Length: 333
Image 1 (cartoon, rainbow, N blue to C red):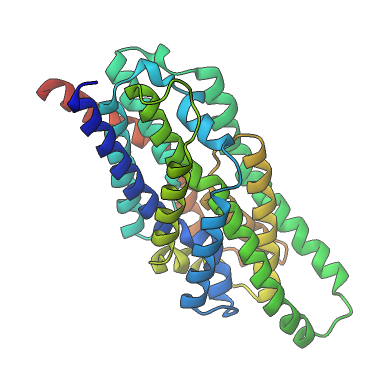
Image 2: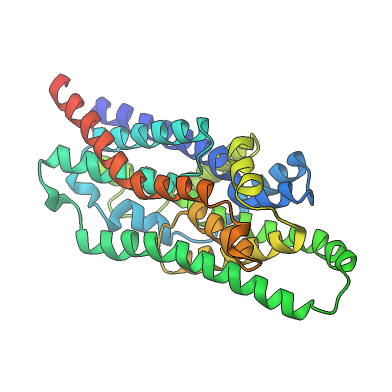
């Protein structure tokens, strides 16, 4: 095996772990935004809890990793350089959106970048399995945020009915504890879906380079990605936490519990169906659903609108960015 392939594969592993680290602090808000904004947990406690549960969640299964690594683009049809370009493109998008405090999707940034880089490399759109892309990416892209809103809304409506005769002080006291459990459930499922994206990319590169004959995630890949995401999560992401948990809607502990539980149910279901969904989208719309259950004016729709636009443009923007980077690489290499 040429030494250049070995070096390129090693570079992919490093870049994928860097992406996973960035994904950790970029998306850590997904699990802890409501807990921090309702003051149920301090920033430090919430981040440490989220890091631990993200680590555990990464070992749930390999279904999402297989979708990323071989379900959309056949690893044997691309070179390691394609994966490198895709990861760099996704990292750039994550850093830009993190800097501006926009809770965009790391998952869709990576998927869009893979698609754009692969198309330019092969000079053909047929390199992408468009049926799988539509079924496993596009449908969940639109459906999961709707389900997030629905479950957040319905959980809150159900809780309001169950607690209709309870004293507000008792409700706050109980859900100040219960929300810790829902935050743990959310963080566990965040790790179960998001960590698998980097696992899929690394395993994809190992198949592409010939280190593996079939797609199967090695244990060292799972462990490395889990640790990278947990470490990234431990750095927090206050800008995005502020946007989601504080600026978008005013939340009490019972609201945070409903939002986190509703979102976690949707994410867990998606993971079981091999769908690499955006945890950011789902928790954001779940928060909107919870706020809207009080009254629609409770949601700060101007902020919500900017978040929705970030979701809409992430895949096409990353397809374009990765295509340009891939084209530049072809011209100079």
